[in-house]
Length: 123
Image (cartoon, rainbow, N blue to C red; front, side, top):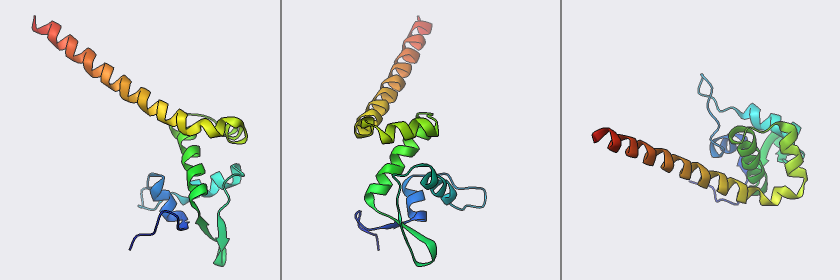
């Protein structure tokens, strides 16, 4: 049975959603999410029964932004804090989409240049 998108998720489910890499033992790296909670005040999970964390859709979206900025854009924690605290946070989804589009364009250009080189070699 799958949970609905609006349901609260456990920290393990959030690690899967964020596609965080498993360690050598096959365990999900939930410690990364707990560390990000200490660094970014915007991440506020519900903490219930014996310190179990439950994340709503808003928290998960913030975690996705944090992961994108830290892991894919190579920003520092302080840089991400500035973005999340500023007006730029609202424009972050647009930034991610543009970055993905730029990567796709770059990959296509590389393929085209390889094809052109191969055609020149055929002559």
